[in-house]
Image (cartoon, rainbow, N blue to C red; front, side, top):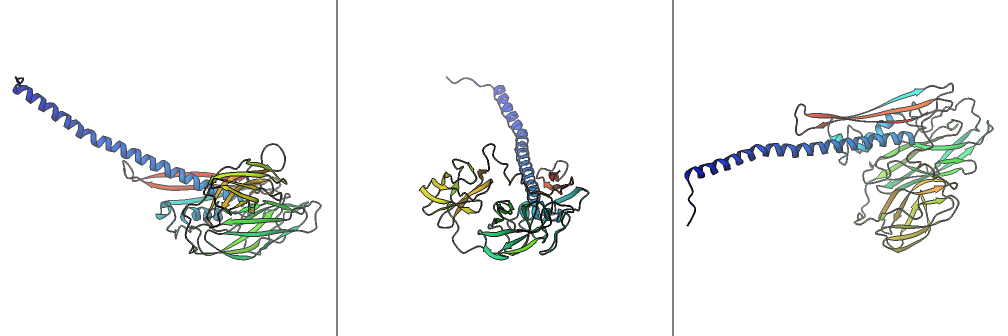
Length: 402
């Protein structure tokens, strides 16, 4: 026999169902709002992290090119990294920050004058062949640089190399040790700046190689660069900066790499300068005939043991420093692990990576200092505009030494 259901019970249950439906209807907008809020917060945090990255890249570039860096040069470098070109004409591959007028990059320079002449290049960007000022009362001999070739052409994705030669003159009683720098180089390099092997040259080791690897985002045009340096006495080249050009042409018609190799940390990852050491390099996608490049030098005795392991021997000519390791397959596909190998000049602690804290910087000698304050601001558009339609994000970095 079915239980008897009274009319009052039916009405009560109907009221309860209606109440639950009404409560759910009230909760749905709140839940949707919380989800949207989480998405909004994630976008804001992601964009803030990206701004910090670009500010740090600008500071690193300024310190790396301390002999020639200027406020406008730092600003242009940041725009090139963010926009793939000038902010007024961003590349299609540029970041979203450059697609509106909401982005600003500000670089202010603060200097503390010393009693000596200002270091050349700190306040201006000389043209190729311009004469640099030499600090007074220096005890280092005069010197000059030559660079070859003076011009070359590469395709996007290829590596260009220049050889820098030091010539030492007279006028002082100390042999100069010159830390090199370069400005005006292309955007989209991998890593984001040229590498020097070695970063400093002297009368006993007067030659260095400048390598720069372009990418698909490097703007195809002719780039005019200035190569210079500064010795341990604070003096620039008596012959001024050396102007060279690099023409980057469009992407090659060769088929792109479908599976480029990957490079993992070699063993050992610290070796001693002047010693030939066998490295075991793990990774993926290695092919027979692959080459191994460390700091612009191709290693010897390369053996591809398998698709996941290569052995190679370091060269005794590689100077102390921290270097990227690049494996290139015969088809041209390559993979790079940045700061993968440390070359130590003496037993003990490894040297500080020059890509993080280079020995060459924007300091004038004699107690002077040079500091650049980099500020990037961006108005983050909000798709949930409670009180305002945009949120101001700011990233600040310093490039300095004392």
